[in-house]
Every structure is written in structure tokens, then in C-alpha cells.
Length: 353
Image (tube, rainbow, N blue to C red; front, top):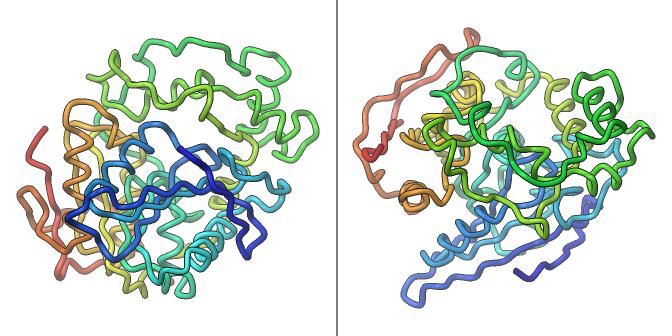
């Protein structure tokens, strides 16, 4: 896939991928922007394939790798923040110049999107929002622990083959200390570019496995190739730390008016209350789509999972009923300080396990 590079008003220079509508009979007027997970990671091969499916449904699809991730330019370590990611989305839509856009955010990309909805200046760029499998949206949410989804393949999937930087003592010590918070991500022990180049898909094997149901442990598809894989461990930890250090965004999120859908997987490796906090605090969530039979990475190329995710997403974007049975909303143990109204909200449960 050809890569463009756009310089944004924020100072970020990001790698951009464009999948124009590939359906001669249908062209949807609102562009769709994809925010991938990571954070600070290249877009996976599986994600690119899913974006092509959306283009075949008549969507004008754009994706960009967030600053420091994939083929995007690095930032000084101190500039990797969740607020920078939010501003970059606004600047990207401005640079696109096609008016308001629909946004699909996955995992940490869903965190960025949630925080966008709490910022009226950037939310004004968004027509509809799809929040798929979000992580914690702010500091109070990040400190929540507890129930996850049904068991994932973490710990039971065969180990990924190939070289890994975490077997090299200097990298293993540096990355381990960073993860424990005992070494700053901007330390000179391992430079940012060096760490990015050293880290491999095999280093993230357990993280990849956590995106799949336990029953799929022995058939996890290849998500990345040596050509497209990129992950910046230091920058990712830096962004996550700024989320953990941020105050609650609930008061701002409760004023959101952007129509949104929350997507939750059965075998989610995310803490459920990270997800239900968004549901509880965003009154503009119109639909919660629960996806049985899939893990955190919902459009994963297994069975008919991509088609199921595609049907759920396009139905919401086109304001059509969910392609499954619906019930009144059920929120499992939301944060005690949160309040929500279920007026006009549907919980959609995909009927195909």
C-alpha cells in the first residue's frame, strides 16, 4: 500500500493510507478515518485488510499512523502525550479538508477517540464515532481493576517464532524497568529510534495472543510482517503514562452530543469497567454492540468475524438497525460515581457466536 506523508499543523508528520471507495454503485458522502491501536504502533496487516473491506462498501477510508508509530516521524520523547494524539486527529481532519468525518477508533485509538468526544473543539470535526474495545480513558479509569472478558489466548498460545529484542540483556533490562516505572522512557539507556528498530512482533507475542479467544489459541493469524511491523515501547509507555496522570474527563464527556457506538468483545482482554465507564459517562452513545466469539482484535480474519464486524459498523454509520437482536442496555458494575440514562440506547448482541 502506497504511503503518503502529511505534515500537520501540530508539528506531527504522519504516514497516511487512503482506500478510496471501491464500489461503483455506492459512495458514502462522509469520509471514514481509522485510529489504530498501540499506542505508537504501525497499522497491522489485518487492519489494512479490514479497511479495504470498508472501501468495498463505498466508504472513502483514511488511516494514519500516529506520530512515532509505523512510518510516521518520531517526536521528541516529551511530546508523546494523549492530548497531542487528540490534537493530531483534529489537525488531520483539517488537513483532509472534507468537512466532518466518521471515526473508527480501536483499542488505544478508541481511547484517543473517547477523549476527542470530551473536547468540543476537536469533537466538532466528528460526524459519528465508533469506540471499539477501548482502554482506560483517564487516570481514575486506569486505576480500576477487576473483571475482564472470557479467557483470552494469553499464556496458552504457542510462542511466536523469530528474533526478539527482549532476549538481549540491555533491551530486556531497559524495557522491563520502563514498564515498571523505574526508568524514564526518555532515558539514554536505549534511544527511541534504537528501541523502535529493535522491537519485533515476537516481543509482543503475549500481547497479540491476548487479542484472541482461548479457543483460537492455536490458529492466531499473522498480524504483522517484518516489512510493516513497528512498535515504539518507550513512546507507548509515555503516552499511557499521560493517560494515567490525567484527571477525570467524565464531566466533559457527559456534555458530548456526537452520536457514538461502543463495541465490546466477548473475550476482551480489557477490564470491563474501562469500557463501561465510557458507556456510563457518554450520553450520546446510541448503541452498544457486543460481539460473541471474538477477542480484543475483533476483525481478525478468522471464520466470518470480519463480515460480522463490518455489518455492525456499517449499520451504525448508516443509521440502520443493528444486524442482530437488541435488548435494553445492561451496564455491569459501572464506576460508582458515574450516572447514565438509557433513553434511546440499544444494546445489540450479535446472534452468531
